[in-house]
Image (cartoon, rainbow, N blue to C red; front, side, top):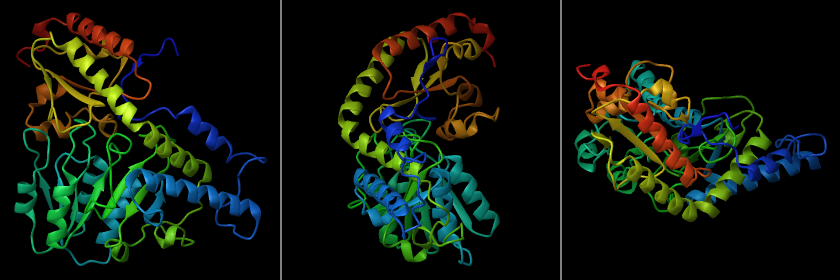
Length: 386
């Protein structure tokens, strides 16, 4: 790993914690807990089912839910699809509200529903990268049946006031879906108190394995939600398919660890966040995008408005994103930054740095030096005037 760049892309994915790996290994191989959780007639299946249900409880405990409200999926993308399409299925039209700065897993799904005849309103963020209660209230219509707004923005790190937004939605009689892939383990989530009907989670953002996620389905949403994958009636009929015990156990272990470490990690990463901004503070024209206070400190979106770093050379020493991972194959500027009001040029002169469990103070200092070196390697005239 010595030749690898410093990792500052935790918002894209996290390494699986070694403690989680050990839990997963116990579910693999002939001597492990390899049974099919649906095979309840023998001990192999019964033990696998126990592992699945333990993990379900671990996920529920972190987010203040009842274990019976957690449905396993292949990740937050599938959870988002199940929530949105599952509520729209069987309806003859209606109105959906989302925002311009959602993850593509939500934006592409509502665009699909729009082509099927549903009307969609995409709210613009305010100057702080937040969705305001006023904007939501103005957009609600008599035929609004679903609102989908993320908890933590994956590019900015800004945090929507889900409790306030949810109260508006609930008073209106609609259902609220929240994509919380970037929030679990980084801030307190209390689905026992929050007026949220569906919430999406991902394991690989929380030091768990890829390919596994979950959807919280509240009591108001359950009777209206229709399955999108059929064949066997697993997960209460909402998501058929043989359960991947090792991945599920890994997600449970990862969420349990996140709960144990959350307070310490939030404090430590806050210190690293402030150190990074301090180290970069003498760069002319540097802007931190989004609210400076209503945010998680794990994720920073930084625009170099006076001079763009040489991103190609920077990538040799620093693993970062110039947009979200879901947009990395596109040469287009970030839709989030454009919605925030940045010009295409400034959006292209923006990088996302995200800190995590294994980031150290010396990594932050080395990253700051690498960014400054990349700025010095590119003269001002290469970006001035477009």
